[in-house]
Length: 221
Image (spheres, rainbow, N blue to C red):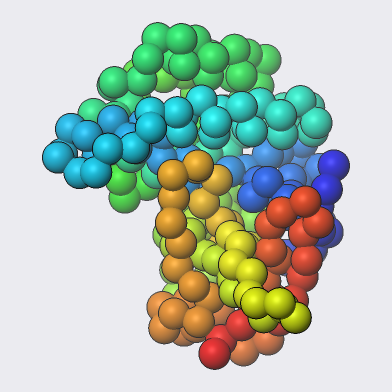
């Protein structure tokens, strides 16, 4: 399992190359911003047509992470669906797939700004989840302490000898961890954006996702 070991408020975590977060002590897998059924929502609102395969791709990767970790608890950190109607439009075969993934596990849907949690799917629906020393919520707060959040879809661009690479990334400092978006059809906010630069402490780190996760100082310029 490819990952980068990190620590937040004494909790030993692993930032996985897929963009999921693994907390071995609680057998907990956390994913953020799945944005399932985004193609359906965009088509419904008259946006550009996207191939309607993102839900399947996202669930395939989630199933693989669950298979690798054998997690007993799953926390979906908000914006699991692109909006509430998108959750209602989930094809039955995908709904059954989620049910199979939930079987035998504690499953928590954290409320996001795109959806209040898929209320007609199994699992527990919460505004936030406290598992000391950590707290899981969708959007970071200014006075965070041991906070794990998502929402911003952070990504990092680094120069290489040939050009540049851009990848979704975890952002970490002494008080908070912001997860990258896990969903297939999700954009991102660069780490040098003013919002993230203000949220994260000066010595913040970034963990780039991919086959070999890499930890670097969080780029700010």
